[in-house]
Image (cartoon, rainbow, N blue to C red; front, side, top):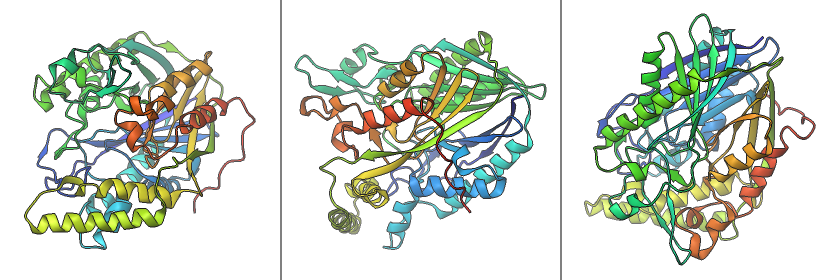
Length: 454
């Protein structure tokens, strides 16, 4: 029989904590609390943990560090610990390797205190969720979501792409149609006598408060949605997983209210859709909890500089930033420094011209939950869903953010690049490589599990 448990920890940092951009980007206001939430699943022989944190993304070092600590504390195998970032852009800086690199050079870009607290919260929530395991009946539901998502890549008559921002000030860009989106929120309801656990999954940037990585702390519309759902279902606990949304944001419907008001209203719309999905949910019969995890090698793009060249660009960026500070100028993110640092650490985690990444999937009955790396375009969600046509599929991206954008190949064409194709670390083939790996997870014999971290 399926068992489920949950827990959460408040990880809201104090004002003054460096936010997602790091340099010159300290939090000025907390709009609402942020959390690290955990759901534990088990069937008596297999256990798994799903952790979701209200941060922009966890790179390889942070992802591996937290998951290994959870494994050591709980005994749940490393490959069965899924760590997901909801991708709210207004959140504390969690680029730990970048932060330590800069701290060694006298620059403050992240909070070691927040990083320590984050690790402790993950271990505590995971341990408590396992202790909360109780018999559960799984229900799957889905419902339409209104006036949140829109495709942010607006194709012009000449084939070029205009980007629609998360808080766009252009009435013309807001007037464009929603475009290619997935309008459904998908829910898993773990019905328990002790209180239900609700998992919600939707494919849209949680950036009603802005995709500018500004000096705010917020869980954005998913946080408001979960609070409303939990209030409507006394004794329940919620967790939110952001689906592939690299080309989808809420910019069509934001900008006429304040940041916080937009997040609140979208959170209400999301909550109502989640409650409708729960009401229409149907039981899922299953006999065992199964897990598969396999490594995939994502090809890096040819234009990604070498490690030595990136080191040079980083040092140049530090010098430029330091000179600007001496002149009394603000330079959020250090100008080009942040991008160079992220590419450098991508190179340092690579194996030659390939970046190792992980695809993990859980199965109960005809429900499949996939944990994907990077910030994938929506098309990968539909590719996986189309392949597993006889299953009900939940896709969560941003489980290890090292790869950053994983766009469709077309996004690399000069006339269709927009933004993502210009800054992506991986090659155009990476989308197909990752999609194929996900589609093969349950079509091939299980591979030998990875070694549990010591």
